[in-house]
Amino acid sequence: MADVPVILDMIRGLAEYEKLTHEVVATEEKLRESLFGAEPAAEVVLAYWGAECAGFALYFPTYSTFLAQRGIYLEDLFVKSDWRGRGVGFALLRYLAKIAVQRGCGRVEWGVLNWNSPSIEFYKRLGAVAMDEWSKYRLTGAALEKLAVNERE
Image (cartoon, rainbow, N blue to C red):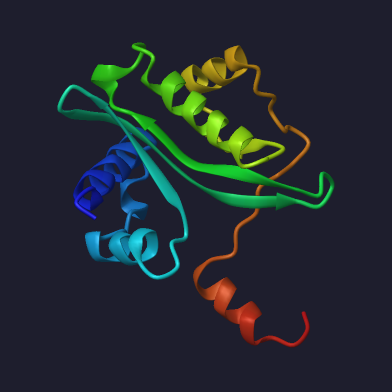
């Protein structure tokens, strides 16, 4: 739980990089409960270079009905700008791949913003394949609440 301020700092750094700081509503209290509470929603790995946290990965389990096998969804991968190009992102993804293999997962999946060409090229070099035929959808806020109470469309 001592890592919570560091995790929040990483989330804010990622949001700044992605030009999405206006969307961050996470607090230390919310992170403490959702990551370290009675039912953790996700896991986090922090990458340190010396005494400084250089990057992080936040992930959670998924399941593929087609594979009939568990998987991992990488929600966030972020490396601070001073540490990019030094193997931190590679080390985080390699660590996640090891976890996936140890847990018998069939795949690791994640999303990337279309404009983030440095990350896209990095993922391609690792052998990752873009899922161009899929579109991501999200229900949140009022739309989520509305659907929760509607019996039919």
